[in-house]
Length: 220
Ligand code: FES
Ligand code: FES
Image 1 (spheres, rainbow, N blue to C red):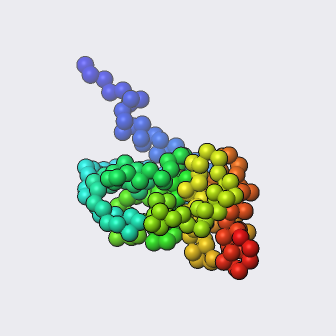
Image 2 (image 1 turned 135 degrees about the vertical axis):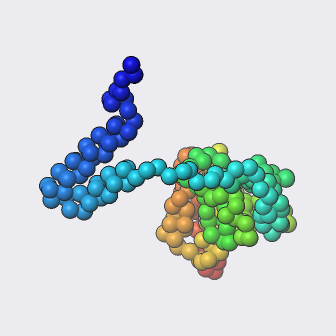
Image 3 (image 1 turned 90 degrees about the vertical axis):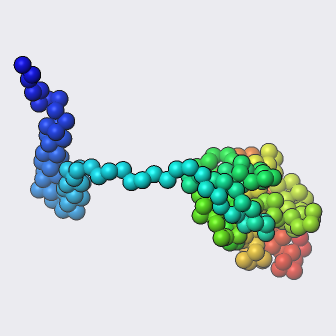
């Protein structure tokens, strides 16, 4: 004869878990944790809701058009493809000047400009860049001429391994585009999201300040 083992019945287990949670919530509420108690009760109620079907998942590749450094290019991406991956892996020719370092929004090595604003390309979906102007480090020099900031980086020895350098150049370029005579504090603030593991910060700030002072009419 088939016996019913309630200890292993998923329905029984979920009912027991629900009752235990509600009991705990009541205890918290009675102890004076009004908002906390309400939150726990709400959480318990949410747990008790029947699970709904998984939403449809987006899958496969789609063609998008990116406007990068003034040139429109089509490429195939998945909905989850980051802008960083699209630039480095999906464009032809690949734009590998934007660096992949942490890939999780910690270091700023992947900084690019989207409509003039610095963003972490590793945290930006490629599809979100459609219809917007993307500028990468490859688009900073014009007609083979380094920008004043890039030139200043060279003159001030503002890099060692160079992995962080494109990101710093993009962040500071955006800052100086908005305020050509930016102060040291404003420059530091602009690249607060960029890390340099080699510790070249003093040289980077010297390089940026030289350009800002030049814009102020002072010596570079
Ligand atoms: S690679 Fe994007 S923040 Fe580090
Ligand atoms: S120069 Fe090496 S991480 Fe900045």
